[in-house]
Length: 106
Image (cartoon, rainbow, N blue to C red; front, top):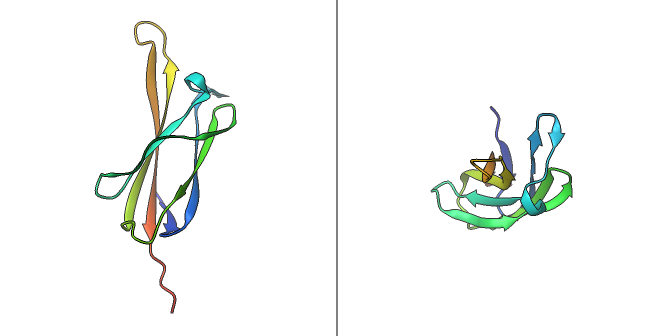
């Protein structure tokens, strides 16, 4: 598995696609949320709302600064879907891992 690398201090786009079978589906209220975890397990962002691009497709731009720690970040996208009785609305999670790097210029 390869991990996408982004340079610390920049902004990058993360996205998610929610699919049921072969059909894109929106979560309840057409709202997808994400939480971003730093390498030490603390949060960079918590429960922010992504932007709906199309049915089942959402994105968000994450900004980093020069003091953010280097390493692997977990992006946890989630939305609430109706799974029917007896579960009703429950969250569905999709995760992405990225690596924040520091690029040195010679």
